[in-house]
Length: 242
View (cartoon, rainbow, N blue to C red):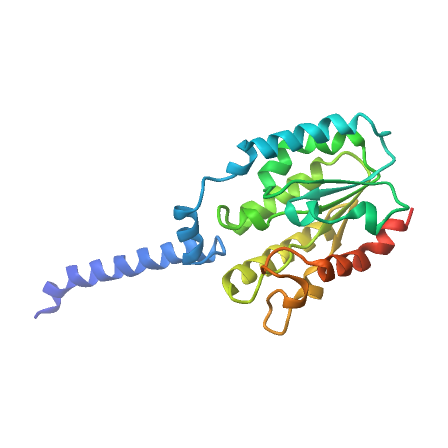
């Protein structure tokens, strides 16, 4: 076939290649996600559905009412999802003034929406943040990082301790890769942000394959008693230091 007759086919082929390359960059490399992310987004529940649940709303309102019982500017506050909520802070740190403001299944958007009433009304002397895991099926890595950065900037006063997202079991390498990337961005943010201290929890929980060490969890996401005891030891000096 003469070259002139092949030219339209070549042009179409080149255009298809360019489209595929652009889509691969935009939907996967730029957003730092894989195909599983889109499958999860399609088949999973709507984004932040948890914030509409009765249990979530009731606990958020309870925190708001409880805050009025505490003196402003005297307490350390922990903000996060179920991993934080299950942290028995009053028992691990009985001599310290600490309030747990975690809610099961919370997301970065949920934390932002309740930040003013659940945290800022206390004017905490220290705030420990650990959030982002529940966003992974719904948001790309950049969105998660930006939301967490906004949370840190929006906390009123005091020292802000941004804790790295924990790994999950090694059978989810794509998620663990994203978590590492997000944590790297969060660390950079804290280095550049006055009043923000980055706490690397992640490195202490990973096994040789880069997943959550089984001795710290039963389900691959939430911590067991060994996991919480390690967390206590990793942050102990930051908790007791005035």
